[in-house]
Image (cartoon, rainbow over all chains, first blue to last red):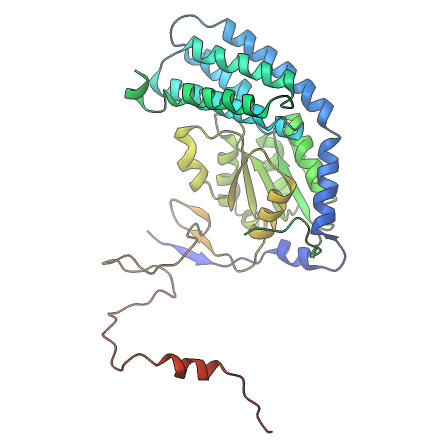
Length: 159
Length: 200
């Protein structure tokens, strides 16, 4: 097997050094302000996502359904990153926990309606409280969700 | 790396051409707000791989920020295609891969697709800027072989594994023998570092 190692020129490096531009502090502040302007749109998108996720989960039967599981994974993993823009970092953590759970279930070709339902209920709660009310309570919810999803992290552990 | 968000150090993205590949409209809005906040003016927004391939063929890009694009991982396929496309200089462009959730069966693909860096969402402005500055560093080596084309994935050089022959041009070959003279005293080393007044 032949291997070629070379060092291509990077135009971006030169552009970044050109005179003008912005100080790091100003750029970060401007970007943060821009993200704040998206807050209402993000909240609306999260509400819509949750309704779709609940509707998909409600269609699930008792057994494993690869297509439905894939659809639900697509719905809940897509908006990861959006809640943090609205200050709902806990909701991002819950979405990641649910995506992990669905990934584990897919790997083991299993379905656990209760584990999915508890995640969806927690997401609704986190969305409505907007993470402001009770930090300790929020952490307890997230720790509980993590425990539920990690039950399936290893095949023998969840069985 | 630890970029200080209060830093007054300047950087300039005004003339950079940036390709954004993100299927979610809100994800795209987040990227656009971050990049325009950084002063970038030329953004090529692509919602799917076909649009991104089209853009790569038509315009020169300096930076690519690409999402993994769902469980199917079309984002990985796009980066692999880009590297093998031979469309210069775009095929060597710095690529920041963003991932909402990486399924367990896609971790190796994320590592091997040819991206410069994989960044987990949620994205924050300071983290994105830190990564852009990091991947833009000059002198990053590119590896081309049958199974991989992209930036060198080795972050540190600890030498050739025992019993193997190195493939890097600057790998040392041959046996390293025992030291022939004693180690230098610390005082001697210190005196080498000491600044001295000289007369010219």
